[in-house]
Length: 329
Image (tube, rainbow, N blue to C red):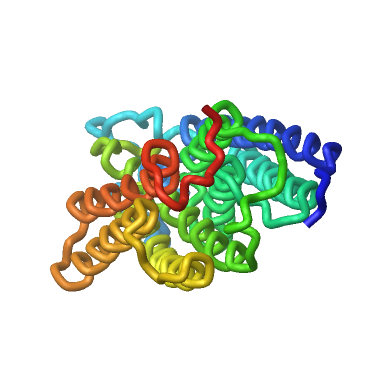
């Protein structure tokens, strides 16, 4: 490990974080405009559809005009605001949000790389670096899942969560780039902590979906449906749970190498295990008892709360062998 820190790269990393926050905020605004003014799910259903004319001797069926369209009846309600064609500029709001998210993702990645190169180690040796990496993982989970599934509607909420997380890290957790304590100077940090970061990003995506599920009001045409939100949360947890399981096992192996024991009931170990149990309870209740809907969302949000306390609260409020997080006083 180099004895000196490349201050130029360290400064560049800090500047890239600020750029990332701005890009995520702009992406959130674009997504919000798409949700507020873009085409809603019920737009196409509310429009009048042409009906083919009857096949025969050129006779137009009763109630069907000569051009094949069904005429409006006097007792039909006028088009609702949500059924009207959205302004032309809103067609670009959603794609602009995705593009800004990718730019923010790239800046987030560059900030991690420059931080790591500045100190010659993996860039998650303290709380500041870990939260930055966790926000990157959350945005990565969203962006790569939206390539396969239609979850762009979550963009505004994931972007604001990532921006708030980075803002919290910059404001309250930032420490100057430097070497880590000897316990962290191990290849296990690339295995154990990387797995925890990836799983946390997926769990954040599930948590955002769960919160939106609970606050969504019936009859809303701008927000995604509750079944869609539940489906996204479940898929993210199904992928993230085995990765978190691997992270816990890898942490035990690292503890044996570093401290001579696999498990010592350290606060971080306890809450990592509690988090594992909570997400296992969600998957078990859904698979065996058929828990779905609000009950399942509440269980996974309890697990999400355990995750957040394990990742942030334990290092700030509790001590133990994992108290090397370098949280500023």
